[in-house]
Amino acid sequence: MEIIRSVDQMRRRSAELREAGSVVALVPTMGALHEGHLSLVRLAAELADAVVVSVFVNPTQFGPSEDFERYPRDLDEDARLAAEAGAEFVFAPDVSEVYPAGFETVVHVQKLTRKMCGAFRPGHFAGVTTVVAKLFNVVRPNVAVFGQKDGQQSAVIERMSADLDMGVEIVRGPTVREPDGLAMSSRNAYLSPEERMDALVLHEALEYAERLYRCGETDAALLTDGMRTLIESAKTANIQYVVAVDAKTLEEVTELRAGVMFALAVVVGKTRLIDNVVLGGTERGRETRESRDDG
Amino acid sequence: MEIIRSVDQMRRRSAELREAGSVVALVPTMGALHEGHLSLVRLAAELADAVVVSVFVNPTQFGPSEDFERYPRDLDEDARLAAEAGAEFVFAPDVSEVYPAGFETVVHVQKLTRKMCGAFRPGHFAGVTTVVAKLFNVVRPNVAVFGQKDGQQSAVIERMSADLDMGVEIVRGPTVREPDGLAMSSRNAYLSPEERMDALVLHEALEYAERLYRCGETDAALLTDGMRTLIESAKTANIQYVVAVDAKTLEEVTELRAGVMFALAVVVGKTRLIDNVVLGGTERGRETRESRDDG
Image 1 (cartoon, each protein chain N blue to C red):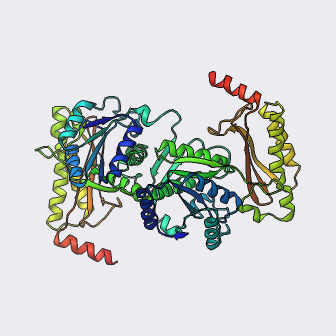
Image 2: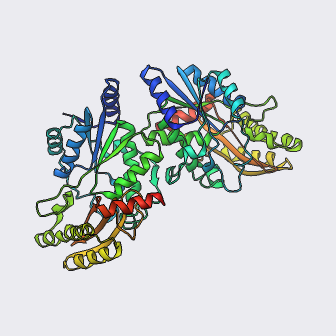
């Protein structure tokens, strides 16, 4: 395990890897690694010869009232965990290395970022796509692994990579959950015991919707309404959005089918949590999809 | 000489070149190649083992009332000229290959693009940086050559390449002029005989300013005022801007020194022309520069 702090050094190392014919995978993170991240590192290690985990708490993707300052940081522990999960390199540049004086370029996916989290976190996704574009250019990975938990982020990154001909294959790793269903997140640590209980409604609402879909319900609005009612029953929970969208295009759907994502953002106490589930194929779902593809 | 129309084919060819250890240079153009472009191709051939000339009339960098439709196009002639000047590949993708349905990502240099041409051509530079980022990602050149005639564009591309860690060395090739001093441009063909005569004031104004600087004048405003008076004497010429700026940061200067660029945009008849000159070192200029670097 090598911890790399400079862009130049990272660029040299990945050039060496490419010259040696290695397939390189990148797992971009903000550190505070938990089992969710580590599952992505393990997936990356299956897909590639060398895995780079970037650890960078990116200031430009935090809003002015958000938690940039108090976001948890522990590089040594992150490096230990990443190595254990199969990473060869941790790329952890300083903010001044990533954004030197005079920096003024932005990479922006214009439409996918307007809705859902983008509507509540102006500038967030431009911060994400800009830093990921930089990471891609420095590491030049063959494949990059992102978590399905950040479903909109994955869709936005896929769009950016395709639009700008980056030649990086984007893979989404499945969401990892606590035993009681709460999606793993570095921000779960902010929750009080009461909020931690209330936070379970996120997953409960998604399970409710997925269960009814499996039973044959295809009315998206009916299920998102039910999810809202369920979430509102938790005292410390305030909904930002609950939607049913195509997992790739993020377009809202009225009729459920495989490939639709139920996604939600809920502020629990003062902590903003997101979660989602992508519907799989049911017999009925598959039929619906095929008939749409024909149309 | 190979003409490549598809992104995938270009990507494969440049991967082969890299694997063979070749240094690759890219010269991005909109075609209608003239001696200005060809001097860049020759410079690229000196710097690299393989030269790719891209020929793409990029719709996103034209405003709605600009000349996208009538911009001159002749791919066969461009390929012949590029080959003669030392290019191995012409990359000439269709618009639908560059911007497939659903395309929505933009690369934007936020500050350098506000002034000068950017103030008169909203969206122009975002169109340029987005398409150049794509070309860089497909071709992955070691070096890219741009014309100093588009001085602001060069500064913007340098900024983008550095900010996004693209790892592409940007080289500016000198402006090539007609015997009477008019900077070569594909748009010169739009000029009527009277306008063609009037267009000479652009270069005359730059020569006037450079001459006085060489004689020791360091007052930027005095010279830009003189340039304006000179240009206004031409009946069909309408000034958009005349400025003295740092050639790299584009910040306006009050005192002249080496590295300052006099730049101007003038509409002659209905044709928008730009030109510039970067001041070299004079004894006095060098002293001024050194004393500034100390400060």
